[in-house]
Image (cartoon, rainbow, N blue to C red; front, side, top):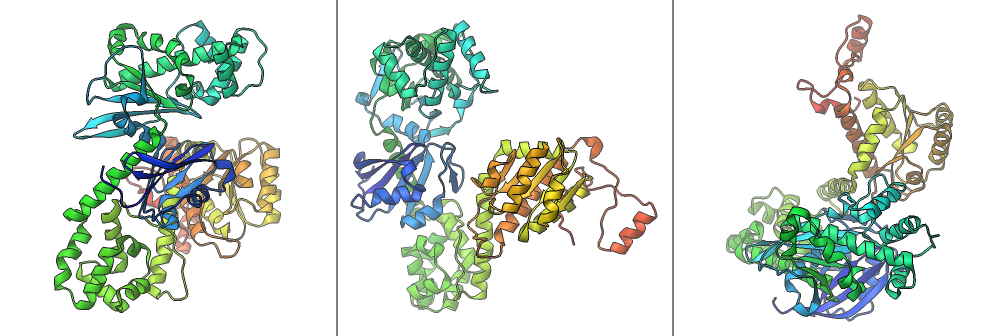
Length: 637
């Protein structure tokens, strides 16, 4: 790794603690601080609190490992309420680079860089050089990852292997599974090999040994087991280590991990010699016909104090090298094009080129007026500069520039100002809408979408409820589902809403649509629906009162303040969710119901009426080779 121009910010974010450090030189971590997550409103506030404590010294680059899948710009923690945009946070913190990765991806990338003194081998076996490695770690959940050699480097696997199904091996483990079934329909390894899993196993072992259980936390169970002062705790921890052997062996044969299986996380490294003496390795090698295969694979406990920081640093370094390589080699097409074309530009356009080359990331977010002022040219000159590069205008140029800098196109919310030209105003309105759509896309939860569609498919009757500006969303939903031949109504008048809710019964579904999820009238409707035994599908903001009352929830979070502004972006987002539900219902309906006879609406209402009166019947929009899906999302004329 090269020397640093300035310290780099490292973060390791869990559901309880957020750890921070400054990497002042390759592998040198200073000013290490742990902050409690519940003492800070959000991720940005926690980072700011840390940065206020340390000498910042012009921090330009940062990397964050977080206990959560990372897919896209929006990060929403699974086991905590923090949610943030990577690009918006980068801008708020004034960073040139912000990399966010899954914490186990980071820990996996640290493995090749760990010294032998930072590992403790448990059992036999010998690691093959430059071979696949597997990683397991128990903490608030069960992290699983792998590392695959690729040329001179490594590729880390993004895995959710902790959710693989637990399989018992003896009577005690069968009793454990039966006990766990009382709480969970599906029992994964993470349900057992984690902090909460340790507490579940304690209760199960108390029942198995016919001892009265106490209310103990995972650390208390572990402490009593290590002291040898509690039989049930001792049996629990011994079983925990044994099951870790099963999970590790499964990972070894799945990956072909001849480079070894590594154990990290917050629990195993703290067990010390107890873990070495446990039945972990015995169970690991107990693999039937493949016992000889796994016996040759070594297992290691990761004892390095800052292993996650080490891996996060390696990922950041690789990202910076990639960006530098792209810039210097011309792989970033637009920057290379600017360098080649500079000498042929006019003097004024050359000043724009120099400004872009020197401040490329800043240009991505600056309006045309700021770019022109910084380059000491007129705004038309900026446009001429963009067109000289073959771009249609500034917006097209920024998209190409963003793609060249990061490999993605960051879109963020930008405030409209009185100084904006009509072109800038249009760009911002469209850009803000695109940003919001991408954010909602990143929030989609497959299980909840499936649940919502199943609710609608099984409904005897569907009622849509919304108030104010969101009334058009309910009416649009009614139109779409009526075209699918489904019995439904839309209610937008509060007095009628409560009366309609009181006519619902079990098997009906009420779809409540709200931007804030705090509207008193809709809360009252939700309560009435619950009393009648009907189901609630809410399309609203997360963590809102309405969201908490829903049987199924489709999250629509946005930055629009509907208390002070007329809903625009948020209304579009809700319309898109309705479209998604309509298409999903149409695609999953029984084939016998996909061709319901009903009048097809045309541009001529009188023609529609004549067709209906004359008994002329058409096929409703459905999913078939001759009926395009586009018909399903047509809005009323």
